[in-house]
Amino acid sequence: MKGLIYKEIVLTKKTLIMGFVYSLMAAVMLLLVRISMICGNLANSESLPSLERNNYIFHYIPCIIFICALAGNSGDMYSDDKTGWTRFIRTTTITPKQIVLSKMISKSLIISAAYVLSLIYIVLLCLFSGDSLTADMIGNITAIFFGGAAATLFSIMLAFIFRKKQIADFIFMAVFGGLEVAWAVNMIMKMDEMEGVSDDFDLLDFFRTEYGWIENYFLIIAFLLAVIAAVCCYFASVKFIKGREI
Image (cartoon, rainbow, N blue to C red; front, side):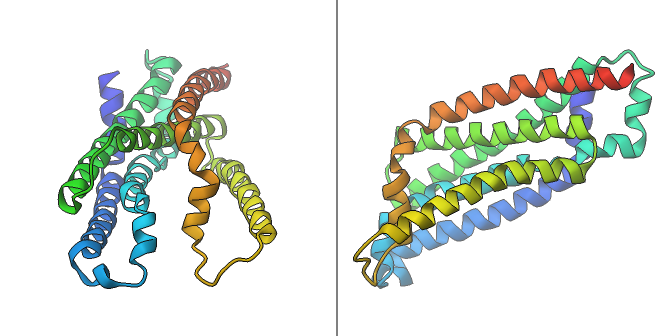
């Protein structure tokens, strides 16, 4: 099992390094913007009140980028078929359960590393900006971690079921894209119903007002989604692998 996990991580080493570099650049950029709001060019800017009200952007967007960039890649899932590894592994004593678990554990380790980086970022942000590090911040970042884990495990399951990246990506994008389209249509309808919108209308304020209540349940919902995704990923993937061996 250890060898399989090591193999999964090695296969994604180059992608992980690139993802870390890009994520670090985004985190540093937002950190500098936050510092500029305090003692830089943005301190006297007209947009400062809006940025201050929507301070959560600087708290959580880099964390989302870290988790998506490091754990979102599933290209290694399809290299097994291309390189002949799938056919070779059937001649060994490695079971379908071990194959699936190795994928799930390796991705969990990677996304856990992204979670640690997110915590380091939020600590540094609070240190440099003077913001208070609260339990709510840690809870929200943890919720983002569980949400990213759920999406990653869902993509692993699709990869095992369909084995073709184009089909798996299409279904993945169709599910999440459909939810995004439904959300966007709902938001547009709500904005159309608004009356007396002033010229200084702040879209971020509107989002926070409409969906601020989710913060109270975000951690629980994300945790349940991660558990459901893990259970479905394990049993469905093992079932489909065994079905191909028959």
